[in-house]
Length: 291
Image 1 (cartoon, rainbow, N blue to C red):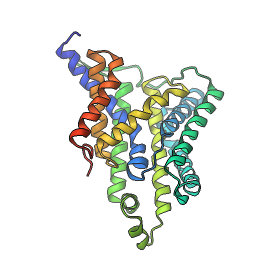
Image 2: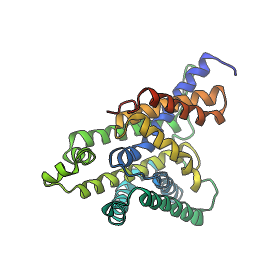
Image 3: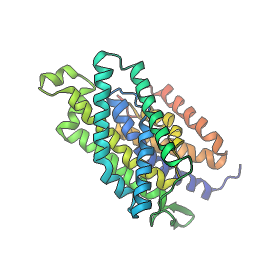
Image 4: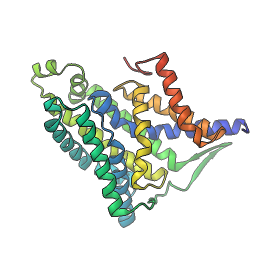
């Protein structure tokens, strides 16, 4: 291991930028799992789907991947609302959402991945954008725009979602449905409709996260598997249902992984990051900003 102050600073900066991307990837899981208690392990598959849509539109028309993802977000919302309705009728309504619901989302993960393989194969795909190549230099610090731009937009996404949850009626209803559905019904609000809206929003975030992913690295259909454990770990570490906690946890995991990869090698990064998760939860079981 060769240590230098410049290397340390760059590793921390890189970890913060990657952490911003992790926050966008985990935001949807924080809504579905952290608030609605729906274990959507297929969420990374929808992120990959968002990546491929950004790739297709970029390759055929030259549109910016992030702009494409924003335009496609309403379609992902409708997809998410439809998936929740199927999940509710088939499992939640019957009280079978635990194991069978998990199998349902595993099936969605498998079907999405296989469909993408059938259409696109297993070759890596990438996009072109003006900010993918350049790097900003501030003294000894290097900031690749291909990571900084997704990080900045991710922060905006988290801020918008937090404002939605805390300042709007729908957002407060989403928070309430996780705590007391009966009280919500007494206020003439349909909990199923609120859950459908929340799950649709969680899938809509996958559109943006998918564009961020293919900007940062080339993708192929099975890449999403790498993020299943990480997104749930960040969600739990930050505190169930806490978007600010998700952001803080994502930044910390990004920094820990970056430092480990820089000084000890990439193979150690997952083990050290999950060790950090376990250590933190041992001290604070509710997560960093959990109640």
